[in-house]
Length: 139
Image (cartoon, rainbow, N blue to C red):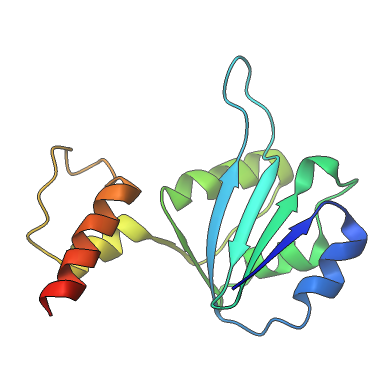
């Protein structure tokens, strides 16, 4: 697994243009307290590379990254990913397509998952890891 820290636009296009993956993990970070800020860090990964895009240090949102996020043929998965999609829309007018919620997938894999949350809440990532790791060990 390779980690790529991409603080500027000139690094972005060259780094991800060669990727032909149709699935990526996605996570966005921003400061929520004391005041909300725009998405400052976007994390994207495939089977071989973790990309860390410091959007807050870039003059504009990277076009090649926007094309991946808006591509309906590319699956982007993550925890509370719809919240990330909403934030990207609000902050950068990115129309993220084909977002897959990991907690929904976890429930499909292990239907008897027990949580203390209501059906409208998502499962915490640490709980998903516990459930899926135990599923792998059992099988």
